[in-house]
Length: 142
Image (cartoon, rainbow, N blue to C red; front, top):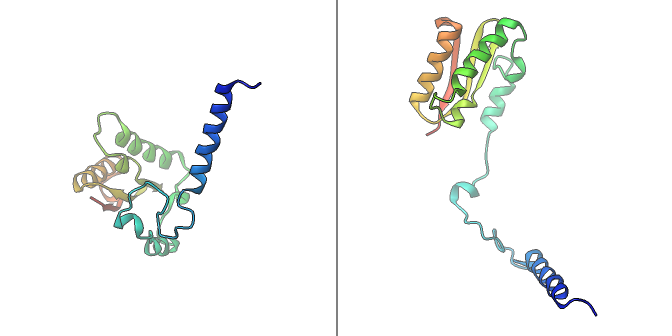
């Protein structure tokens, strides 16, 4: 005869599996059978149409346009290092902005949380690349 504890374990696993796969069955309401709390922002579909159209424009630089010369790579690396240093205090969002350097000219793109972050990042880029060599396209998304 099988071990009763083993049978109890198998039965418990089978019931749990059945409950997980059938919760909300037949209920067609959005979110039925889930325990996640829905928010109006979560229900709204993401729409990046405007940004996608902008990025298809040949004049807008994307990460694929990064210059491959040693000078361009060095500028980008110096700016990134300054952003990601432990004492910088920048948010993870700010640390992940796009830094694209081509022929010594830097384009900064992406969201930041505050105006102070935006100003700080632009200042770092101008210090590294030179005052007239920075195109600031950062967006404050508080």
